[in-house]
Image (cartoon, rainbow, N blue to C red; front, side):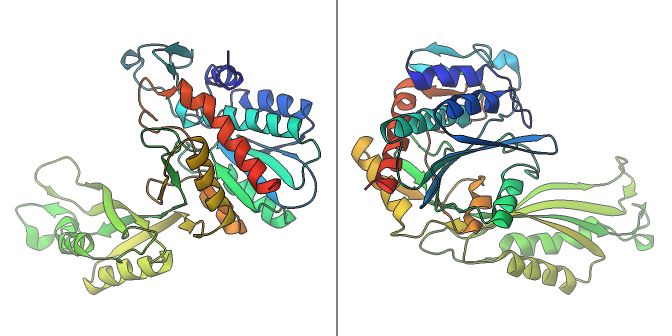
Amino acid sequence: MHAVVDLTCQLVARASVTPDDGGCQALIADRLQTCGFQIEHLRFGEVDNLWAWHGSTGPTLAFLGHTDVVPAGDLSAWHSDPFRPEIRDGFLYGRGSADMKGSVAAMVVALERFVAAHPGHPGRVGLLLTSDEEGPTNLDGIRQVAARFRREQTRLDWCVVGEPSSREQLGDLIRVGRRGSLSGRLQINGVQGHVAYPQLAVNPVHRFAPVMAALVAEVWDQGNADFPPTSFQISNIAAGTGAGNVIPGQLRVDFNFRFSTASTAESLQRRVEALLQAHELDWSLDWNLSGAPFLAPPGGRLRETVVAVCRDLAGKEVEQSTGGGTSDGRFIAPLGTEVIELGPVNATIHKADECVRLSDLQRLPDLYQAICQRLLLD
């Protein structure tokens, strides 16, 4: 079996549902240590993180991935056991095969090959892994590792994230940045009462309705050359006691901004709060900034290298996108690191029968190894 396929199967067979690593990082650490990599296990809370590197001086290229996966969900929707990898019809099936144990395996194989071919290479190559990417908070994963790197002045010049970026074929799309994510949990206070006596109550749903219309209609920015306009979405609304004859006393609203570099988290917060104040509501609001937007600059060395590698080895003219959700790259970019995301096709991620095309999986180490060679040797 091809080395990357074999390692992917070993990783998929470990049911590492977030934040459990399932022994994936220990397996990888043993392999890389055998190749001369230095290994550091960084455990924060219940989360396992691994930093493995080879080389000592010069610029640093890090590959970034995660070993945790989302739950399998309804097992009856799968045609095979999600944690028993199965090859059929040219695809490898299993939870995490595309997101992102296939990429992690490809990174390991690429680093093994690169170091074997160039044991005295200039600069450093490294692999950074976490078991807390798919979880709801991401508190003890790369966020914590990045904070430690900042304190210790650990230098990362370039970072390739293995998130499944491709649309239809390997290398047809890369992420050159990501939008920021800002969430709000809003509470509107009213006065509970009987629906037959509205003069004795204050309905927070009614009070909030014109504010909601204003928020939805607001144009937050126009975006820019690299990002689409900022979007606003309400995800949850809850009010009421369950009884049909009671005016609720409180309304709770969850919402999210996916914002571009044309706005800041602070400016969005100010504008929302100004709308609430203008309507004279009794309100409280908790904000959570999951990550600021980041962008690998046009002409940046990593960005140009990844585009060239995909064009030359994958035979694709690459779409350079800042779409999609967030990734752990949002914690690395503030270190001054140029971040690019390159991985397999994302069509089945988080779904039943998640899979990766075998031919793509087998070519992915070649792309990652070529990035190493062009950045550190050319």
